[in-house]
Length: 365
Image 1 (cartoon, rainbow, N blue to C red):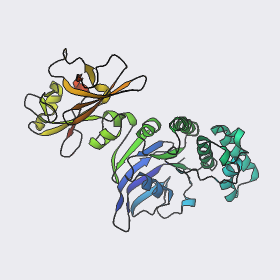
Image 2 (image 1 turned 90 degrees about the vertical axis):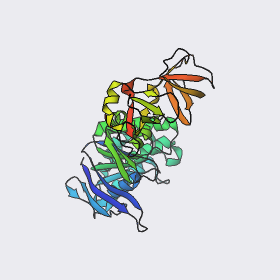
Image 3 (image 1 turned 60 degrees about the horizontal axis):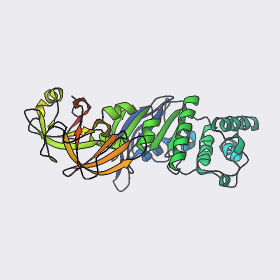
Image 4 (image 1 turned 180 degrees about the vertical axis):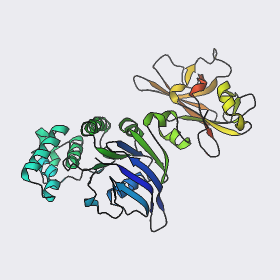
């Protein structure tokens, strides 16, 4: 295993488009680091630069103790698992697993041992004589993982390996990847647009948007202390609710969407003293909003009209509207008001997140 370090790595295309704008981060030896963000944000381009499949415009890329900017992909001692399985259809599972080792001139005994170990690790032992067409999508992806595993590289690179699988297979294969990483302790860099995958797999996460890194942190720190509005809205399902308003001297937030002000609490008011008479954005996670009977609720509770109820078994999503602002509440199943009724929403002031409306950066309280 080896560390991977990027220092101000940029990718600028011939037409002037900046694919990656100065990415700097380090995947520690033995770490599973996830790169996440929406389509076109630069995460896959970054992974391809690490693999050597994209030229680096500027900056420094180091694998282990060696700078590899100009090193050919085959000499970087990395293995990559792509979104497509890229298996040879005329070969058996065993032959697919062994093919890369044969090209490297490994002995028959070494090849047999590594194929056997990978098959046992990934539950492929009973499938070694099958061809890819006889496998399910999840089984094919395991073969693709095994083909990378047998090479015993310094670094594994995984480019959205689960995106072609259905929901159930994604869950099962995600767990297998987590188990595999825990067992072999390899350095892995995993790219995905799925924030659930990122949160459940990554020991740390690098959040990209528009070619720039927005935040690097552990999954829970990203969730509880997002650095800006983008991170706050991207991580979390359902996404964080945002309310815009102007802060008053008495500590209330005069909302754009409602005539009823939002009472922020004494601690928040003191921390936001410099924002009096300025617009701020308040973020509230769906699980931190508690629906109440509007007739019995406090007059300072947030009021919104219930539009859609989504029961999903162990919890219910309430889709509401406060003026022009859409809100989502996550709540346990219980007796709920009818669609079209007005619902009062209470919250704990400590659960609120504050952002500067102009810079979109977090305001620490």
